Length: 508
View 1 (spheres, rainbow, N blue to C red):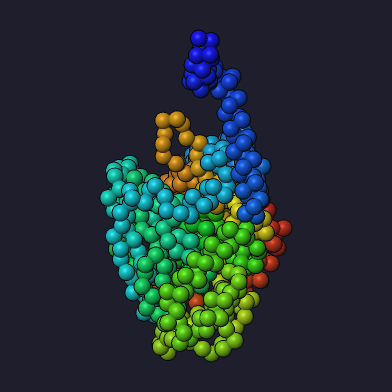
View 2: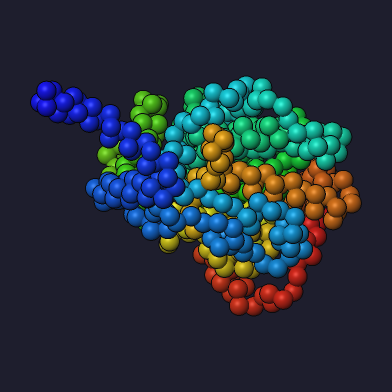
C-alpha cells in the first residue's frame, strides 16, 4: 500500500510542481525575479552570438537599460527661428521612449528594418516608369489604398492638394520593412507617397549600361520635375533611408534655391560617402551588402560585358573594391554606351572617373552643402552598426549651416528607432517616422507663415527657375576638399549668437 502511494505521488509530482510554479508566479516579487533571470540568460546568449558573428556590442541596450525622454536625445542646429519653432511645437523630437532590449538591440532593429516586414501586405502600389534623358528608366511607385487619411493635413495645403512625399530607399534598392512602415504611416496621415527606385533596382528594367553612382542625383532631379508637373500645387517633401541620403543631399546641394522640395529629412544618413566605403563594416553586414550588389550586377552581366570587365568586378572582395572597379576606369575617354548628344548633356558623368579620389570629388554628398536652401533634418543613432564613428554625421555641418539639423539618440540601430509599446499595442511603432512626419507638418506651417508669397509655398515659377539655373551654371561648384575646408573655417568665423532669420530668396 505504501509503495502504491509513493508511486502515485511520484506520478503527480510534475503536476504539483507546475501548480506550485503557477501560484508562485502570481506573486509580484517572484514574477519580477523570473523576468530578470530570463532577461539575463537571453542577454548572455545574445552576447555570445554577437561575439561569434563579430558584431559590436552596445551596453546601453542590455536588459534594464532604456532611453527615455531627453536623456538620450540631442537636438543640434545653428541657432535659427525654425530650430526654435521646432523645439517648441514638435514634441516628437524631444520625448521619445525607445524600446529596451531585446527589441531595442541595434543589430536586431537593423536586420529587421532591412528585411521585408509586417507592413508590406498593407501597402499597395501602382508603378510609373519614367523615361530619362539618356534613355534609362527609373520606377516611381505610388502608394494607394492604405486606409483613411487625415483631413486636417489636407486642409493645411493650398487648394486642398495633399503634400507629396518622396521616399528614397537605400542605394542598393528594394523596399525595406522600415520604409514600408513609413509609407503606411505617411499615407494614413494624408500624404501622397511615391517611392523613387534607382535604375536597375526593385524590378526596374535597366535599358542602358549605366548604373547610379553614389551621390548622383541626375535621375532623382528628373523624377522630382515629373512629379511636380503632375501635382503643381502640392508641397513636395522627401525622406531618404541610409545610403539613399547621398542622392537626396546631392540634389539639394546641386539645385540650391531652385530646388522644388520644401523640406527634407534623412534617417540614418550616410553623409561621408568616401569614409563609409573605406571603413570596415561588421562582417555580417559587409558580406550581405557585397552579395546583394553582386547579384544585381549578375542580372545584367551580358549587357555590361560590352563596356566593362564584369568577371573582374565580380571578383571584388569588398564593397569599396567593387565600387571602384565598377565606376572607376583608366580609360577616361570611354563612354557608357551613350550617343554624343546625350553625352554632351550629361557632361562629366558621361565618362567613368579615372581614379577613386576623382570619383568622390563629383559624388561626395556634402560637396555642395553650403548651397542647400531647404531645411534638412537628420536622425542618427549613436549605436548604428552601419555607421561607425568615423562615418557619423559631421557636427561642424550642423553647428555652422542653419539648413541642417541633427537629432541623435543613444539607441535605435540603423533605420530602427522602435518605440516601447504597451501591452495592448501590437504594432511596431517607429519613433523616427512619427518625428519626421511631425517635423514636416511643423516646418511647413512655419515656412508658410513666414513667407506670404505663394511662390515660396509651392516653389518658384518656371521663369524664376530658368533665371536661377542660368545663374547657377555661371557659378560652378568648387571641389569637395575645398568645401570641407570651408566648413571647418566657418565653424570658427561664424558668430553663433546671431540668429538666422530664415528668409529663402531666389536668384533673380
